[in-house]
Image 1 (cartoon, rainbow, N blue to C red):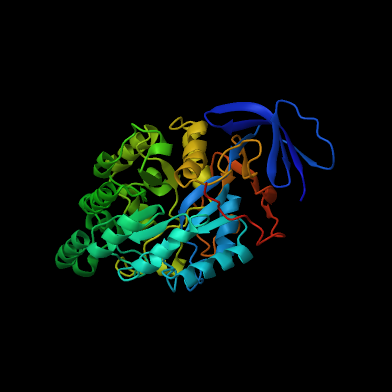
Image 2 (tube, helix red, strand yellow):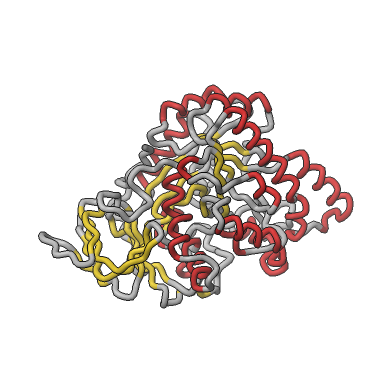
Length: 448
């Protein structure tokens, strides 16, 4: 494997930024020092004026394979991720068929081994009738990040509303339990009322009123109650409301928390005011809501009640999104531009560069007990991203790498550019060019 020496780069890691040389050899970070004299063969990269970040670890993506590959697949979406500075992903089970058996879960790992350009991992899916099968995943703690429960319906047919099933999973799972929390009863009641009032006149602007704050809070509260009852390791995905934030604390260090929470980039960026411009393109579950929710999410992110920044990358085709509100599926493609979006907020003074590295790399590694990734440390896997904070990047049709071919950020110019992405020491992306030569050799997540 090619060795690299990155010289004079501002290394952003563990709350500090300092100019260093970084030597990458045999897939690992061999040395970090103000000046390195290296022997042997290596390629030198001039990092002057640029920053080195740990590769983002996205704990929630939907890459749609198997069965929904007209929207996306692991090859295309992992390339998009790498182009945007995300070096590792955890993919969700609502594919077709759903990953609700050990055999289907293993099929996804095989696909990842053959086609992913990024480090990969896959959640085991929970259904109302597969709890015994889910609990077999207890034997796979070395490489499965957790089990996923849809406590609200989303893409696919995986709604879990059987209290006995929830009781069994929360009491007996030895893995982290990740939940999508929306109360289905409240959503259905709201939908019936809106259909009665507006008929076929529903639009995307109605989405946050149908899938409202109360639906999110009641479901998240239930998950927290189960977790506290059984001392489960609970991670609630894509928090979108102010009221839910009362369920989370910042009194313990992340390593000691049993209940953690994720916020997604689209809930930090868009508000309900943006439906007028984007319509169904930003229709997602849970819904993007009124501006005061976004403001509250930012506050909770910065004070560490919200632990992780992710994307919930969920592509659909352009044609699917052009359907009327009721038929248009929920989900937004985001993984290629999540790091750039957060760097925009760094430039605006909203969040520090060190905090972005923490929330997108360090914190996921800690929360999911990922071994030797997520930090820029000697001996760790070289999952690294070079960014130029002084060079803009315009999103165009030609540089959108999602299979669906569109992004809500098309036409937007980000303030920064991802120039290089290393995945396990392999230079997978450099200035618009990919190196797919070692597909299938990405290392699985290893939990401590």
